[in-house]
Amino acid sequence: MTLELSHFNAALLFSVFASVVFGITQRNTTRDQVRYGLYCFAMFVGGIFVAGWVMWLLRH
Amino acid sequence: MPNPAARQQNAAKAEARKGASSEPLTTMSVIAPAVAWLIPGAGHLIQKRWMRGVLLMASIVSMFVLGLLMQGRVYRLNGGDILDILGFVGDVGAGGLYIVTRAMNWGKGAIAHATADYGTKYIIVAGLLNFISVADAYHIAIGKKP
Image (cartoon, rainbow over all chains, first blue to last red; front, top):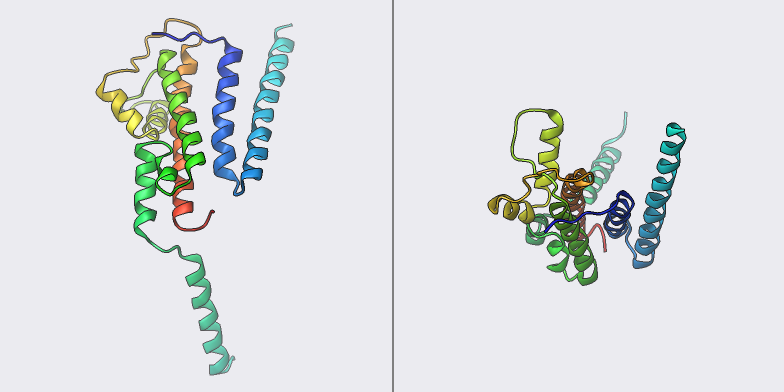
């Protein structure tokens, strides 16, 4: 069985898993863990879009 | 020059500081990181952090398995290129998952499509995230984290 994800989907899944681990391990209370996990996810996704636009600008 | 009473007081304070900074070595503080490395998330589960353990296990195992399904490459012990050595160190972090993968001879990394390289990165990062999880399990065991 082989899985073929698009670049965007692969980066999105990566963000989800990494954010969950960062949230749980880097904060103490449940509330802070959820907030930090969401913050990391937002940063990851924001980074994906920024990197995408930078590559588009370099291409054109 | 401080008098003997002041010197004794300073020594007592220094001893108290030393005692506060050293972590107690308990059975759990040894077992939890070992179990956490071998089975991602299990270090939290044996300390009754059920939700955290399940989420860590789901995230790390999913990442590792997805990496394999994407035809990612699993690094063997090597003494060559520095990136290959670091790749191996990252992979080893996944503990039992790495051992099983090597035993089953999976992760040959036959790159058949453009995103296969993502698979290799998924596997390495799963191992690195498990290192963080191991450290967290240890901090819980020594009482540094609730």
